[in-house]
Length: 349
Image 1 (tube, rainbow, N blue to C red):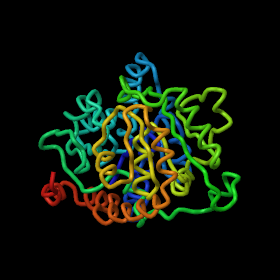
Image 2 (image 1 turned 30 degrees about the vertical axis):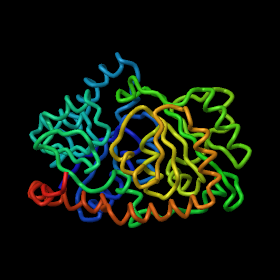
Image 3 (image 1 turned 180 degrees about the vertical axis):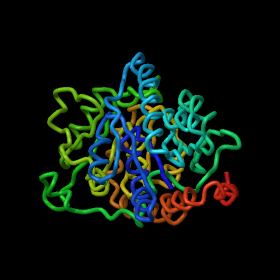
């Protein structure tokens, strides 16, 4: 089988990497396509995958329109040369349109529910894979699985954290540190959304700095006063950071969900709703705030709770036990497609 996987975000590399390695090991051919947005290219290089870089990602409204035509054409040309049997992505518009041209099935993961993107790719997509926690409904094309994207790469079957991260961060073993994540708000699904104010970020940094080391992961440029906190690691080490940080506070749902899967307490600040975050909040692993009001107080409350990590470990074990290994699901689903549709159609919605 020949599989073309399109990448639109660093998290998508993680989502598909173990699947791709296993499929290649089983004599299938896999190629990735990518736009250079954050550090997707570095992650693909670290994994040793065969990939094609389509160039810089566009952020402006005009640039996104230009990119739709440019990257779709590149996808069609790549498909002409590679001749994929199946297209796979996290809701890639470019994959969907190229798959239509070549009359091959396009399979899309979806967890953001970005209606602008879904409207474009859905007509050209055979199957849309979503978590049972996902709230949107897309009709007969939608197929559910019991889990989260993050369980494709952070399930204990695939990931064991390394405490070498302390040395890489310039810390003593088990020295307390905290990770903050600020997003750029440039993505189409970020329109109209908001998180922490500049002053709220400063207050959090000031408080946490008195307890341990503070690191910031950010999309785009940080203000000058925050640059000293910017984390400087290889992107492939980020999940070790999330495993050992005492607390994660951030505006990105992906990292918050990753923390839930890893057993790290997380505070998520964003007006955007996510079914996975709602479920993980019910487990007691994530605390969701629609704005920065009350976040500092919650941070103090959590760090003063002597039983916090005992509670988190118990909740994390429950989450792992009640959900699936998403990579194993995807290997079976793609390897036996389209017969696998009927096999998984009975998953409770």
